[in-house]
Every structure is written in C-alpha cells, then in structure tokens.
Amino acid sequence: MKEKKPAKRKAADSEEEEKKPIKLPKTTKQTTLIAEEAKLQTSSTGQFSRPEIRIVSWNINGIRACIKRPNLNELASRENIDVLCFNETKLQDANIPEFRRTFSTFPYQYWSCSRAKKGYSGTAILSKTEPISIEYGIGSRKHDDEGRVITVEFDTFFVVSTYIPNAGQKLERLKYRTEEWDVDFRNYIKGLENRGKSVVWLGDLNVVHQDIDIYDMKGKDKCAGCTKQEREQFTVTLGQGFVDSFRNLHPQERKYSWYSAKNVRAKSENMGWRLDYIVVSQRLMPRVRDSLIHDDIPGSDHHPVELVLTNN
Image 1: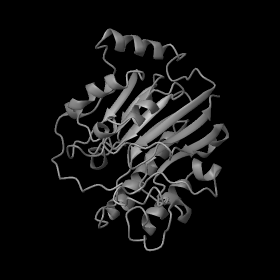
Image 2: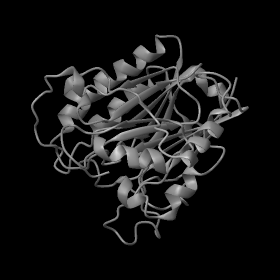
Image 3: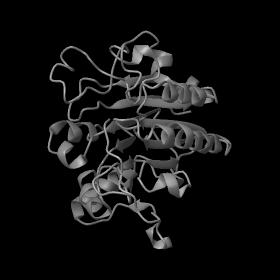
Image 4: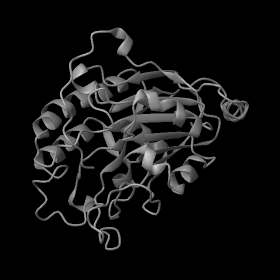
C-alpha cells in the first residue's frame, strides 16, 4: 500500500521508449513445449475455450521477494487460472526475460515498468489466451511513466490491470490522485466501454470505499485511501455504470485484502483493509459467478483477488 513519491524525470524524447507487447521467447525446448501446450487450450484470438473464466490479481509488493516464497508459484500453477495480473512488481525492463520464463505456462505476457523511478510500481498481465490487442497506460504522459496500467482486449471484454497511485503518507499526492488521475482514468475506462465491450478493472485501487471495508474507520479519515476525496471519487466512478463485484455479491462480509506489515498483530486480530478490488461493467454482472478474496494465501502484505465468469 505505502509508496514513496517518485523522483522527477525528464519526458522521453524518442518513440523507442514506448512499450510494445512482449511475446514469450522460446528460449528452451521445455519452455517452448509448455507454452505450446497452453496455446492448445485456446480456440482463437481473444476467445476462451473453457465454460468458466478465472481472472486473478495480486499486489505482490516486489516480485523478486515474493517469488522466493512458495505461494506465488503455487497460485500461478493452478490450471484453472486463465489470466493472472500482478501489481507493484518493482521491476525494470532488463528483469522481464527472467520472469517470462518463470511463468512460462502463460504464453502471452505483458509487463509494464516504471520509467519514473527504479524498483517502483509496475504491473503485468499473463494470459493463456491470446488477446486481440494490448495497451500500456491510459494515453497520458503525466500518468503513464509509472507503469501503472495495462489493458488487454478479449472477445467480449477488456481486462485492465492497475496499481492506482497512493495519496502518500502526508497526502502529498492526494490532489493529483483525486483531481487528475481518478478523473482521467474514469474517462479511459468509459472510453473502453464505448468501444462496445465490457470492462474488468482489477488491482490495488488504494481506496477504502465503505466503512465495512476496514476493520475500524475511526481516526483514519486523514490516511491515504480513507480520505473523503478518494472515497467520493470511487463512488463517482461506480456511478458511471460500474460495479464493485465483491461488495455486490457479499454485501455484509468483512473480508480484507491488505494487512500492515508494521503491525505484528494485524493479521491475527483481523485488522485489515480492503484495498484490492474487481470492478466490472454493470452489463457484465449477469456473467459473474463469484468475486473472491484469498486471505488464506500469504506471500505479500496483500492477498490475491479472483473473478469467476461464465464464458458466454
């Protein structure tokens, strides 16, 4: 959840710095065979072959540290996961080939790294189905240098993997977050909907929307993620035809996706925050079977979230 303000950086002056989709390289015979086997599970570009689609997102708070624990590999090896999204990878472009090989059961991989600061932010989408198109960022230089958004298009919906900016310990980025980022990102996902397909927006959204989404809201209104401005902006976004899938399906459940690593009693006493969400277009809700928080999977200060959809 916590993140430091990135150092300022000069804007790129070359188109070569723009990111392009990354195909899994066939570096070894084993990697090639695994990738080809995964491709056989798909019928054609953008179309899922199984009757049920599962999309998982996890803020791994630095993939180098998380990969050393068994839980990430165990999750990634689940055969029924179709799309796996990572937030806060903290990688640079030079590190990507190593991790492409690590997750070789996903032949279509797209990684976005921060160009504003090393070891900061970063997102990824790994898929067993080849997407129709891939986009990095939301089309704005002032937002896109931190590697916070990747969008892939499938036959009936877009998947938007995000790591939303934190307002900062002293709320130094609150104005940017609520008056610039939230507004522009909302316009971006509405623009995707206007292209005729639904949206699945998921990741660490860095907001506690309702009081039920935190163990105790008292005294937290000046904390990043809990401010009136951030919560109101999320309400506005949902009002544009989007649904918080977990809260819609589990209206009274107190389940959290983040526990402070600074508080040794946080997990044992269930002193958590729900910061990781799966938001979907209203018209996609009839296909949503479940929206899950896997608070029994450790490995990061966040827990994975999962969307289960019917394939029709």
